[in-house]
Image 1 (cartoon, rainbow, N blue to C red):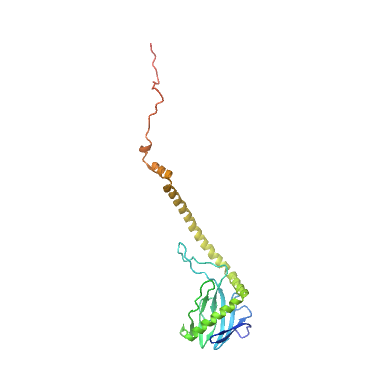
Image 2: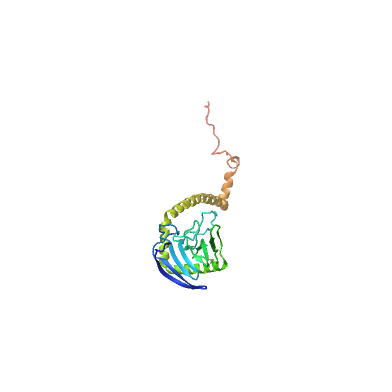
Length: 251
């Protein structure tokens, strides 16, 4: 972010290694340090503290883990109308929702962390540092522990502004609406096809079960399956004394 961008005080927290101050960007930030267009669902914080400085971005994140149904399909996930989780970008990374440029105790950090609010969150996440020319690798223990503590405190501070969290979630939901609707329509068509197949199978099995469980239906089916000569033998019907069809004249 440029020096001309305006931040407003958001709060401060006392951590095990000292007091850390958070300032929130007053205008809509971008999702990446080098982009110019705003992402209205992103919140950017400038962080300062003991040997800590830089920017952290927070974006809403849909918490939709894989779930197991009867088909065990890969597209079977939980679903949220509004995102309940966050992605906290504190370092540079590829293919993520947002990025930061945080430096902790001399380490320029890489990547970020997914934060969940509706299920247990493991705050012992991996922290990596950037190194020019060789990519990134695990940060030293001191940097790792301070980063974990810092990110947890910032997320809690961010969640205190419920109206802001809601507004950002709504902004992302509007942005993703078309794609998520198309994905739902595709999944619905697949499930509808499966349901129709199951309904046909259900009706067939119901008929077989009725046939086997019913005494009358069971015996009737046996009779109907018998050979023709066993139960349809032609008989002779007698209505009285036999009389000739033609009587010859006498006398």
